Image (cartoon, rainbow, N blue to C red; front, side, top):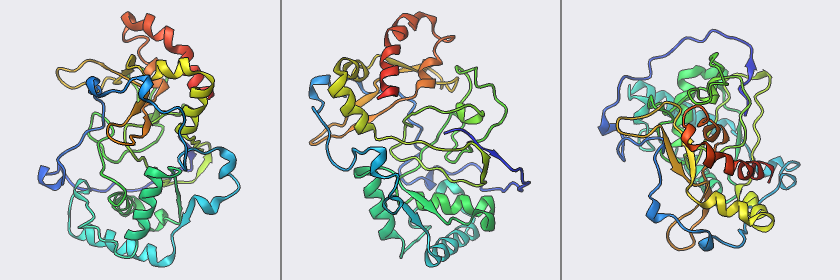
Amino acid sequence: MTPALTEWRSIPSHDIGGPPSESLFPDGIRTSGQHPPLYDKLHPFDDFPEEISGPTVWRREDYIDNPERWVHEFDPEEIRELSNAADDFITAAIPLTGITKENFPLPHMSNLLESIRTELLNGKGFVLFKGFPVDLWGNHKSAVAYMGIGTYLGYFVSQNGKGHVLGHVKDLGDDAKQIDKVRIYRTNARQYFHADDGDIVGLLCIARALKGGESDIVSSHHVYNVLRRERPDVLRTLIEPNWYIDRKGEVSKGEEPYIRTSVFYLENGDNGRVYTKYGPVATHGLDPLLIVLDGIRIIFVPSLDSLIKA
C-alpha cells in the first residue's frame, strides 16, 4: 500500500490516556513479534503439505467482480451500537490500551464479528467495511470504535519500538532510501507485498485520497501452491530459517539488530496451517547494516524475486 496524498484538514489532537497500567491488559502487555522463532519448533520442508486447498486459496478473479462476497456496509443500527459503545467507553475515561469486549459491549454485532473473525482466520482472509462515519466522529471516537471492533477479532499488540498499538500510515517526510533505519509507512514510498507480524491487520481510512493509497492483497496459500508446483527449490529455501530481518533500529537491550527467521512456517499440532512472515524491505535493509551477511543475502535474492512474482 502506498500512503495517500490527501487534502489537509486541521484536526485537533486528543488525549486518549496516559501510560496504561499493566492491570488493564487482560493477557499482559504483548509486543509486536520482533523476536526470533523457537528454532527447535520449526518444521522442515518435508513436513509441509504438497498442496493447500480450501477457501484460503483464491485468485483475483474469484472476488474482483463479486463485492458482495467481501464488503460489509454498516447499517444504521450497527452504527448506533458502535457510537453508543464508543461514547460510554470515552465517558469511563479508560485508556485506549485498556479496551476489551467487556467494556466495549456490542450485543447485536457480536455474532456478525465472530463470523467475520472465522472468515479472516479460516476463509478468504479479508473483509472491507464501509460506512464508518469518521468525519462525524472525529479521530478520537473513530479510534475508540475501531479498536472496539478489533477486540472482537483478536488481541492487539504493539507495532513498533515505541509500543504503539494504533499507528498512522502517513508521510512524515522520512527518507525511504534509509531502509535500515526508517519504517516505510512513515514515507511516501510504495509498499510491496508483505505479511505483518500479527494474525490480523486492519486499516481505517480517515481521509479520502486525492492520489495513491490503493491496497493490494494476495492469497499467500495460492502463492505457496504455485511455488510448490513450479519452484519447490525456492520454497525449500524460504522455509529454512536463514532470512535475516532488520529491526529498523528498534532494538531492545541485549538483542541483535536483526532476527533470523523463515518466510513460510507450519503451525504445530494437528492440521497445522501454513503461514507467512515476509517483508522485502526489512530484508534488503540489511545491506548497510550487516555487511558480513551480504553473501548469504545475495544468494537468497532470487528466492525473494520468485516469491514476489508468484
